[in-house]
Every structure is written in structure tokens, then in C-alpha cells.
Length: 191
Image 1: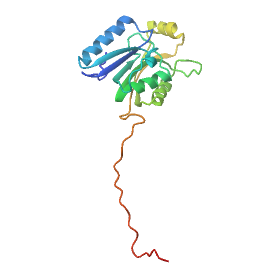
Image 2: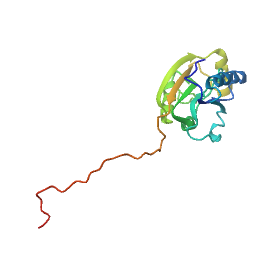
Image 3: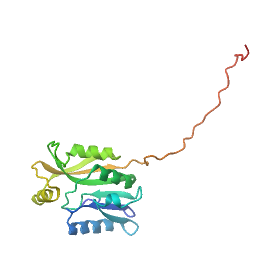
Image 4: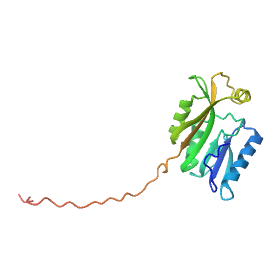
């Protein structure tokens, strides 16, 4: 497992869904807790409860979604917007999702480029694809069971994105030096 740049003292969220095997989730959380140490925190959130969890804005340094081994998580626009909201400025999202290799407009499974576009539209910057990998037979079965989707054109894609180093809607006073202009010499104001 990559450490995703996680260090001691960071606040990390792991987003899982019904396809996530319990033992794999527990193993991932244990590894993350070892990385964050006592000063940090690892929160575990079900993707279906994320919108109701009422996390404060800018709560997490890093969010891992769909990265529990064996997960086949899909991310809606609302979920991506919520993830962007609860990330701290400069915070990173690492996301893994099954994608279609061929464009299928009737599919709820996105293509990799549509997923990258959805991340950008949610407010993240520096969105880039890290890895593509084929699905194992078990993962193909999980996609059928949990997503009700059958296709021979599926891949897993791992993508990262960052929240900009500012809060949307934040304001800051600008220091402007405004000097009063004097009237040009030689002009008379009398008629």
C-alpha cells in the first residue's frame, strides 16, 4: 500500500461503501493510524452517510475514497462536492473507481476523462490520473452485484486532486496605496 503522503498529525478520512470488505477496511485503517500517530486522526465514513455526517468545512488533510481493497465505489457529483468541501485548503483526495474504456452514455459508470472532469467541476485542482489497472474476476463480480453493471470494457482508475490553497468565498483586504492627484498646474478654474 502506498502511504499517500500521510504523515504524523494529519487528519485522514476513509470513505467506504457496501462493496468494501470489512477486514480490508479494518486493515487499511490500522495502517493509516500507524502513519498518523497519536496526534492525527483517521475517520471512517460510509459514502451513503457522508452528506449527512455534517463535517465542518476544511476538516481533513487527506481523503481516501474507493481505496479499500475490493471496493467498487462510484462517486456522484454531490459526493465529490462534499469531499471538496471537507478537504482543507491544499488537502489531497485519492480516489479509485471503476471506469468504462468506451463511451456509453447510458451507463452510470463514467469514463476516466469524465471522472477527471467531475473532480475539476467539484472544485479540485491539479487533477491527474495516477494508475489504471484491470479488474480481477472478483472485482468484476462485485461490480455486477453492487452496481448492477455488466461490461467487458471496465478498468480501475486511481486519480488524485487537490483543494486550492484558499477557501472558496474567502476574502482578504488588499493593501492599496492610493495617492490624491493634484490638479494640473497652469489651468485656471475661473471663466
